[in-house]
Image 1: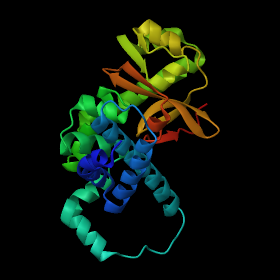
Image 2: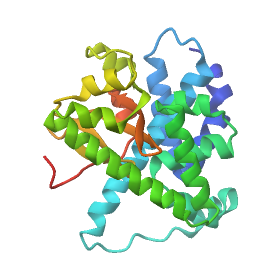
Image 3: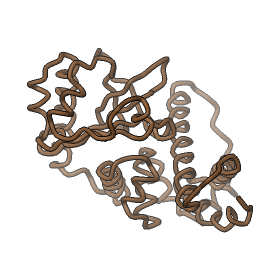
Image 4: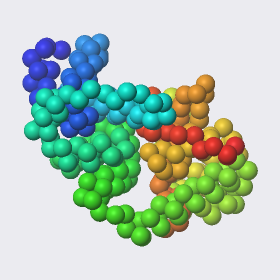
Length: 281
């Protein structure tokens, strides 16, 4: 690829990376890594879309690592970092301190969905492709982020729905481990569907499992998937040697599982906050 082609996209990509990461220096690092990746890649059909996807996923991976470091640093007393007023002033001028503080409080996936859709105006179907998540997932992520950015408390109905979703998924995973097909079917919407990404398909998973019977049969008796939280929501994952190999994201409506995402693409998994739920086998 010609350098001029990449340079033509650089302002747009830099704006996205800076807004997601809140740091011009970190954005520059992401752009450099993107250039290295594209220099090793052949046969790109849609260059702008490919670049947007790579930049967004690199930003998400960096945010996830940043949050992991923050947790570790919070547990270990350290000297305060030096203040850099000039850098802080520049960032404030470009983005606004208040907005940056709010964005920093968002989960990485919420942050990316909000920035791409609400700030840069990408349609949800494009955001879905870029993030490697379902349309349902990116809409929920952007909605949660929008509410936090606007300073609105989570509605009581939404809190209740989230609690109900967690209860349903917990019961579903328990039934799956116990081989309780009857309960699985009761917890699934009649038109429930599970979709696997391309990497999952190479592992032998069908692209789509349509209908409650097909989804229930896929999970019935499965014991290898451990309960986890994925971007703060209860789900499941296959974990090997401490690394997440496959994640299952559940979408619940009206007390029933309506959609399951099977995600095995390591680039997408690297962007997700996956935390093992202790005390469950």
